[in-house]
Image 1: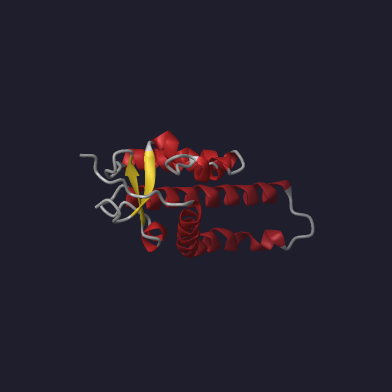
Image 2: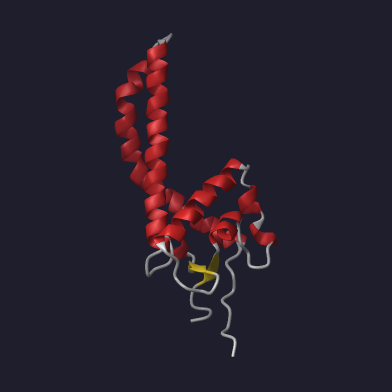
Length: 156
């Protein structure tokens, strides 16, 4: 007997989950960004910042992006590979991440899925936009990582 298959999470449900996760991560990143940027406020008020000042601004911006990416990766990969199988945004929308057989994914697979999202962003979000048109509602990062996003409880 074939087990019932959980319905796949649709585009808008997944989109709202990403927005919720973004708000949560912004809450944690705000104080970090503030600590990084307070020392450079003086540079921004200068009429003509020096080349060294511009380099400092670039370093701070790159550090902010790197720290944000690190925090987002740990948040996403840890929660999606946990017993919860979902970030807080996904939990709020009653969806979870599984492998192709409906099992919990490993941290390594969740990491691959996360970095696949970066690829989708680099190609003008096309990797996200294909999701509604695939049979199992997989975005590019799901196809690369061999994962599904399904509604919680439908096949349990």
